[in-house]
Image (cartoon, rainbow, N blue to C red):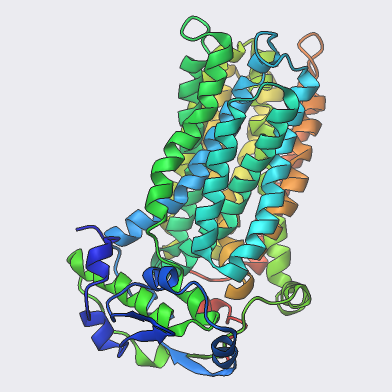
Length: 533
């Protein structure tokens, strides 16, 4: 039975609604039965009148919504919710991989005839778009809701990237690459907020890591597709790269249809004065879980929250929360995000260059090595993720950062000594990033669960943007250290590896001191929302 079925969730009164005393909502002339889900309410009643909203915002209310969500067993609803939202990382992995692969093709005069500098600039524009999108849509997600934004941002990506495939020149290409990047950047803030707020607390760590790790599933799909699409013996040169850019939108269209039927975050609704909708949405989710054959555990009445809806905070309040109320968490988040971003950008964006310069691997053959590298990155969060919910955040975050840093230093020394070839180098990198991928995903988990609900999406966007800014230095620095094929510099590159290694180890030590034991704890226990009285 479909947990998102419109007819089932609109049926009237469910056991869940009777159990928690939710009856019906009337606003103006709109009336809905108690079984109607909140996302239908939102569609029928797009906004609450100013007078009603002002009364609601001043009223202290009591609710068990967070406790009801956290005690739920895993069900088909949760699986579909995660798949529908987590695809953003898959799309980004595909985008980065395909864009990197088509760079050399775009230099061909039969395509756009770009220079090497212009090809590099297209990647920069996409990353800048991601940062801009994260900041703009992150703020909007906190203000207008998770659902509206994760539908809007995916739609923006689909349209912009589809149009990019039709580019007749560089200027056209850059404009729509920026917009596609903005859509993906906005996705990160909205989807991580929604997932953290809807997934039961005992599963939050492994789910967040798995979602972030699917970036590498996208990289594998992108690698496999370009191996065929960019082969001039299969498709004309000016056709293959355009088809490559259409893969993401084709995948996204199916997911966009599913997303339109997802609910708004009940926690967000609750803290924005829409208690009736929050109760109805939660009741609909409970009913979907029951229909899947999973009994509902009892709710601890002592976990009820008293709150006065706060709404979107001002920028001054946001600065106060980050810098005065939670400075240790801010330092932790910045350190984790910058170190992993620098490491990944430095290694991933120079991967083919290292294989070509030091081992003579052609760009075409490098895709096979990249596939193995991506497989290790994908496996890490999936295998290690459950340990973040059992052994705990502090142990796992610190150990994955420190271990990956030490392994990188050892591998760098073996490389400098000339003891590796293309195959052994790739195998060792795959092992390193099996661990480092879990560490990097834990960085996103940390910044998404340790700040108040009212600023969660913007906090994710801010840390993501800072990390991208520093991470963007990695490819430039490492590209200079590599040298060219006529004058390669393995010793200089070794020093670069040591620097990246030191950053990861330092971040691990910071996590050992500052990490919060967030495993299996409610978001409200970790960080009380600004609305809590």
